[in-house]
Amino acid sequence: VTRREIRESTGYEHVWFYVLEPDLQHGRMLAFAGGAENLQWEHAQTIRVEGDRMVEEFLRGDQPLVIEDAQHDPRPNKEIVAKLGSRTIINVPLALIDSPLGAFGTGTFGDEGPRPPTPAELDHLVAMASQISVAVARIRRLADEEGARFGIACAGSRLMTGALSADKARGHIRDRLVELVGLVVKTADREPSRVDYALMRVGVAGQLGDLREEIDRGD
Image 1: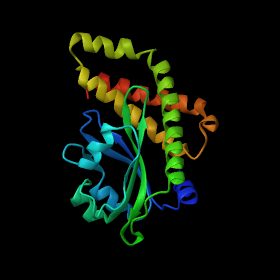
Image 2 (image 1 turned 180 degrees about the horizontal axis):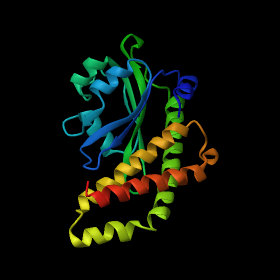
Image 3 (image 1 turned 60 degrees about the vertical axis):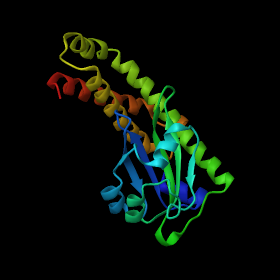
Image 4 (image 1 turned 45 degrees about the vertical axis):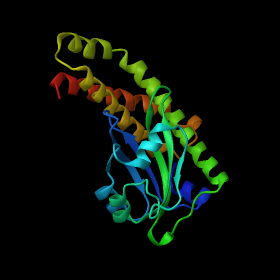
């Protein structure tokens, strides 16, 4: 899902990806393309879920959330809205089969003014998010396949001996998944059928190798 495709299909100039942190209480920006990128990384790299009515509402449902004009809507975080000049905010859920993963979004800022999407544009954004979720699910299956070769023996033995907590193990695994999502973002201008999953398998193996090293070090 590239900025070019967003621009050509909907006219929006910005695109972002957020993932939920393991505690499910914070969202972390994985990528942003568009204007004022430095401001985005400075003020919106991490978002706290609790107390942010827009994010709380988004996570309660499984549908896109459209804020027509953040300057006048009480739900978004007003401090962040003021710093970024946010106007229209469109967030579409990214989810794995059994859990939410984050959001894929677009919108307008500053002098662009508010511009809510048409029904056709929103449908297109939902379809794009669905393609990303399909690619992520494919990579997760690859990770499961590769991880089965050492994951149970490596992490399981440490869990049983108390050398590794369950929360830390989940955190390690989710961090690796987030990095794999980054691989999807880099190739997401392709249809899922065109993604080089053989290359992705190499990436999966590398990420799982990093995970094993982290566990061995007790990080």
